[in-house]
Length: 216
Figure 1 (tube, rainbow, N blue to C red):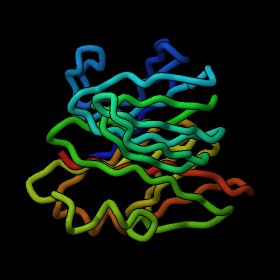
Figure 2 (cartoon, helix red, strand yellow):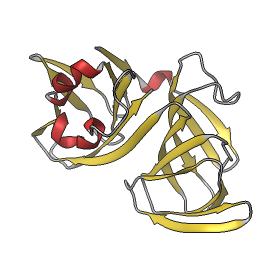
Figure 3 (tube, helix red, strand yellow):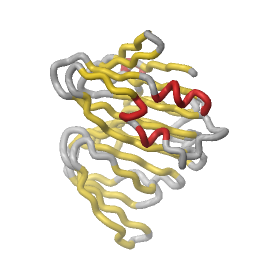
Figure 4 (cartoon, rainbow, N blue to C red):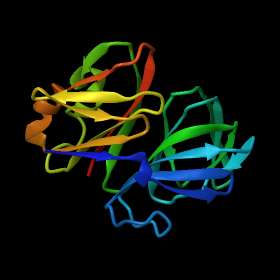
């Protein structure tokens, strides 16, 4: 099992057509988003214009979750309308990168991208003041036996935009500052240990925690 804490100071920010995109983590770590030489990637982005057009990413499954305001998405494929959806802040949505996707709304969002061979899920959750949660109950979806866990690398990620948080394991704790990313890389036989980890935030307000799990 390996813990990897990534400071926001190391994130890479670049402009895109409708705002800025900040790469938080890419796997493999020598991968390149522009060249599409990655297996999975997490990022945040600002949508600075009321209407936006998403980059078409063939062969990529995408998860998106707005932070600040609602985001209305319309999906089409080969000029045929598919469906529209309005996402509230901290509501996650999965769609195919092959689709033509347009958005309405000015906001900031969190993104998880998965290429063929990687499977993943993105889940937001709330942390109440001075409360601890065990990871197995907080993120049950990550440990679903129907997921392709055997013979895969497993990575679980945690990120908060509005508070510091800490994870406690084996009587030790790892503290993460606001907007840091914490990754846990583990094997199938270590699932029960990961499920028992405790997560807490120390502020006197309810905060949001972004959780994601990837098998690859």
